[in-house]
Amino acid sequence: MVPEVLSQPAEAGGSVGIVTPQTIVIDTPLLLACGRSLPRFELVIETYGTLNAARSNAVLICHALSGDHHAAGFHSTDDRKPGWWDSAIGPGKPIDTNKFFVVCLNNLGGCRGSTGPTTINPETGALWGPDFPIVTVRDWVASQALLADQLGIDAWAAVIGGSLGGMQVMQWTIDCPTRIRHALVIAAAPRISAQNIAFNEIARQAILSDPEFHGGRYIEAGAKPERGLKLARMLGHITYLSDTAMRARFGRILRDGDGQYNFNYDVEFEVESYLRHQGNSFVDRFDGNTYLLMTKALDYFDPAREYGDDLAAAFRQAQAKFLVVSFSVDWRFSPARSREIVNALIAAGRDVSYARIDSQLGHDDFLMPIPQYHAVLRNYLDRVALEVSL
Amino acid sequence: MRPDLALISDWIAPGSRILDLGCGDGALLAHLASTRQVRGYGLEIDDDNVASCVAAGINVIQADVDDGLAEFADGSFDYVVMTQALQALVRPDLVLAEMLRVGREVIVTFPNFGHWRVRLALLGGHMPHTPALPAEWYDTENIHLCTLADFEALCASANWQVLERALLDRQHRAGFSIRTAPNLFCEIALYKLQRPG
Image 1 (cartoon, rainbow over the protein chains, first blue to last red):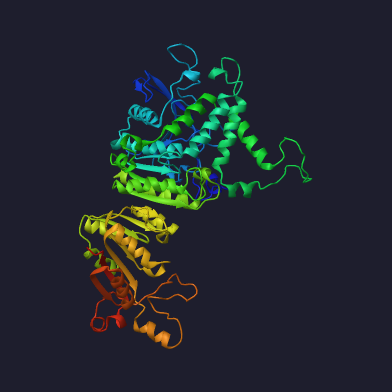
Image 2: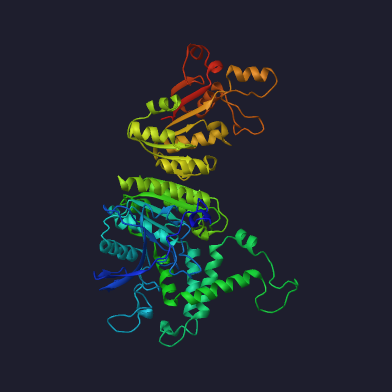
């Protein structure tokens, strides 16, 4: 019989196996950017690997728009799919759980157990729903710093994130410069463009204008703004894939084998089927109010704003060393946007490396085990591991 | 440490800011960081080299030198360095001008196409194969070869000031023959340039 470990490709590394989320209660009040504050809140986290005695090997993973705390491994033996970044996190993988203690959380305002629109507001005893305050990337970093306090982690060996997660990483280096040694900013931008905001606005309008939205109190009404949420996700998916990738994957292929047009509005092209499937499965696992919050956090992110629109000035606060990674066919957060980050870091005199990965899909490539991407991550983190074990 | 890289490091003031164009696996930057306490970045296009730089803890920016240095501000580096890459550029003159815009001083090395082996091969009617230029004419990366005389003519016409010059054979030695007839015997040329004024 072939041992289990040999059936894995050597490059891929192993799985963290079965993991159990835990809830961390934070009793320290958190003042939010919007002016409101939360006297206490809960964050759901998963951890992989072991914290060393010096507490120096902790790595924080920040999730993107629709992500959560379940980044690696499986919740049960009949789980079909592992966590969202299982390709990169595990024993022998680029974010090596033999070397690092990896923490991933569901952000404040999320819908996977952390305090947010789908949890109870202790002041009213009712669901937060649309009353949950709008949170920003800066608020998330502040909440994650309180989480680090709770876990007894003075400084992260690295904070790592893609897309909206990469924005949290940048904010960490500016707001908590002594608590982050290495910043890995993947497929991100220093702030989103008018075009990005426009996509987010359409997504929000789809949800807000759904007749089942009920002013955000849809759970109490026994309803769900499914159509809006589905439309929002379909729109998002178009921006996650490049034109080339969509063409390669779907072309103009028709679902029915006879090759005839049906002259109606049913699912006809493969790409329509794909988008509807993505939309439908998203509705089952995501919350409308959370989607509104997350897209707004994305719109508001702009660390240079407080520094006279000078990103380099913002990064002069930072002490971390940076790795910035972009993907060649990502048009949502293009390589040019990553270069803006890199150029500001160089102007600020920070240590930074930048890799532009030749890729196939688009924005979603940051979740893919592309060999060059994983080699760069692995090489960088191997050095971090050496540094923290000294 | 390659002797030409050691020579370059002698030309660099400690603690300066450096941009190394086509930095390869980062050997020069690693050497300068340990011996000269420089803060620097390498520009490199090749995937494997980028991964090697990251593994070595060298700041590397993955980019094509031929795409230009427009992203870098005027005078943002003390030195801009380019070793053995000038001849592979689409427009070496434009890149040199950009290097002199971005850096206070420029250090550049290239193979001398005026070397006697090259001339001998051409006299025999063929493109040269030399230890410094080993590839076939049709698959070489070196598309803009020049002699010492050509390079210095460009510097003169562009009004770039030559601050230092080191002419070496392929063992990176500066011998008597090179001093006597540099354009005939130099195989590898190192120049340090500055903008006028």
